[in-house]
Image 1 (cartoon, rainbow, N blue to C red):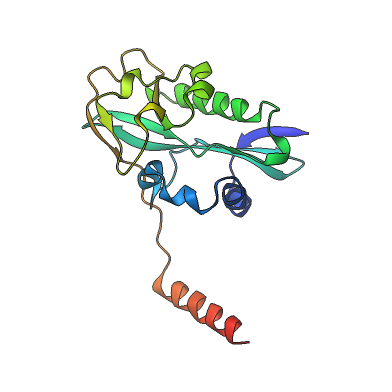
Image 2: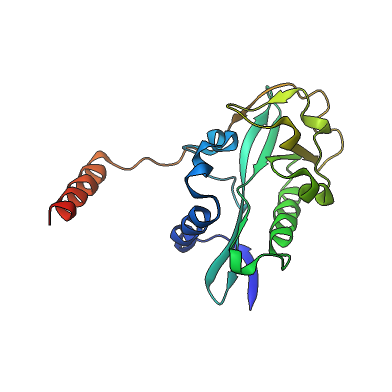
Length: 187
């Protein structure tokens, strides 16, 4: 049975494996990744699709600023395992993400993605014309949805990360990891 639920800490490894499978290393080169680096997703806005406990889909929202002093969210990455595509899971993850974001009082969501796919949710490039992202991106794929009408009226400038910083591992943990990796290679 497939369910969509909030992401749990135990889902992290499976989520990352799914993102690696879906996007490969290229996911780290995307402009939207610059907005996620070193940050935690927005509170209560990370979701997974699971089939009997196996993570088969993921969607997360991130706190950003759509220009100076204009809070918004960034959706992504959205991924569904290849074996489960074309079953409506991506759409269900987007619907859940948007519904919870709206319920929590967020006003706007942006993303970089396929316009024909995201138009059915109400996303368009109309509200992003005076905004830009760090790094290279296709402006036709930079889309937004106002959860509250007028939320992005007059939005202008660089989209910047505003979310909580991710905790950094202690130096001793990093040293232990490197030492363990070097020992494994030597063996």
